[in-house]
Length: 86
Image (cartoon, rainbow, N blue to C red; front, side, top):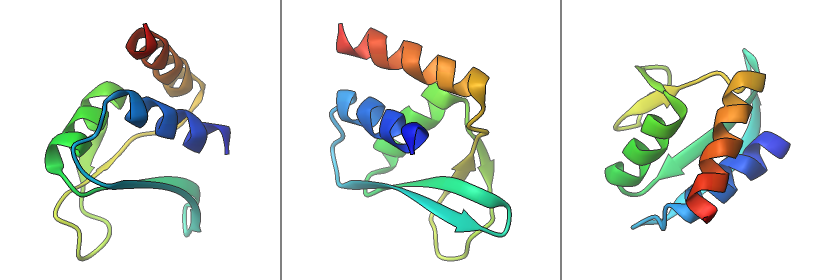
């Protein structure tokens, strides 16, 4: 849950140009945080910040990216959040 909250807080600092959603789900690989964006530029900005790679896992999405939410990524997210909040 902390990871989803941190992602949400980071997205807010970007002042997204469209609607977005952040939610925690349980899928076949275990727990995951899904972020959906109305505008590609908002998705691109988060993807660049977290170092996401392109994937094709779910049908019906224009683009998909993934990254591991491990301790290293959380440290990077927290640093990016602090930098954006200054």
